[in-house]
Image 1 (cartoon, each protein chain N blue to C red):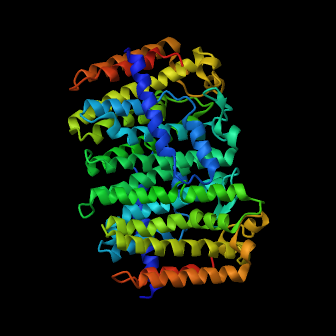
Image 2: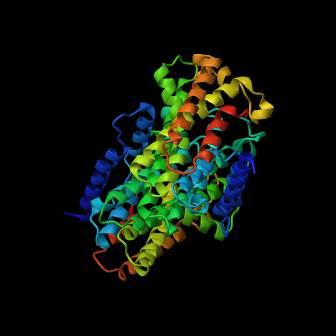
Image 3: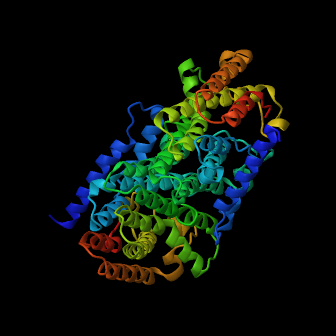
Length: 296
Length: 296
């Protein structure tokens, strides 16, 4: 079985479990469930939950043990896409080749679907507290990490800088903050949560953290590069939008080649960190390499 | 010291602590912190956090022990107001006598400020995990209750029905769902969280739950009544907006007098439940009575 099939299997496992977490016996009002599912099952690659599963397994837990927390990360990622696409934000009509949430359900329901997914993410992650193999204190640490990655010190902070920097000349420092936070913080949290839920010691956790920070930043740089080089068909959304909107991007700031090199360097450093972690880190290595090789 | 001064003192204590939870050593980007504080400190009555403090004290904890969870409820309430006021939702320009968040900061920052407060609420509530007097499992139970009250089975569900029912004739059952969920679920959760954090047994918790459900529903009915009878000056927002928009309200459905009577009846029943709870429940009784007596 090749790695690619293996990661696809994990994505399938995640989808199956996530469908269960979203389902309620009495789904009322139906439109909010429809809207949550519409965006959640729109063909995401499940990168974040896979990272949580892999890091937890390295630290001694089974995939299924941390499934609620893993799926919670995908819910947070999805809510952020729904809100980012809103007319008041990036005003996108197309996401993963389908109409965006507000195009399909209207703005009010799209805003509420995002809110609902964010809230459901916390509810779902806390289900790890029902697993006797995971200490309640570890659940609290992991869900706190999730909030940190998703909040003003992480993803939301990055998004605010992104929105308020449009059309402005920004410093290298601001660009670095933006990239570290906007996408990187949630990817870092996905990796770290797996270790925290497993009760890994602080030294191990900080290795996972460094690894997550590096691949998170690489992921965002590659996203910016693909926005310039890829076609709308492959990306499933309108490309060259960021550069057209004079958004603060790595290629716009440092050029295309330097950006690609920066991403490659980060991944090499990330893989080096994996060498210091006990256990089979080949899955994480595979994902790290995929981050710079992907074409969509 | 009269009860009113006593409740004002609690509100002051909440404000002081909440300011601390929102502050970060490095507040970047500043606009998101400004926007969070702008709405959070706009003169709210702090009803929800006071409920958490009071129920926790009845069950044996000190106010300060559950302060993070109490303040989290106010953050969730505030985020919901910011998002409800957005042009795509209720399109309100005025809230508590001040321009709404999107009028002050623009729509993008308002959406993100709401998202940030919701995320910060979970981060803050989880700080109770650092308190040795509270079991980690109790923190998980309490924060799960918070997510339940705020999510699709609670506040968000109610808001979706509210938005999608505008101008339509709805059934008694739908109206009851709307009122139970839109405001009631978060008020119920505020009460229940105090008991859960204290490690109260399930029988006690269910008494707090019934009390919270009844006063939560009463609060929403009185809100609808005040929308018809009060002036914009007292309410600090545009009144008669709900009736003008053909929103599904109690007075619109059952008439003004029947609505007032329904709220009074619920409060009487809530006070009866307090009689079954051990400890000094006079603070909760005071709040329950205030719910029907308030004029704004």
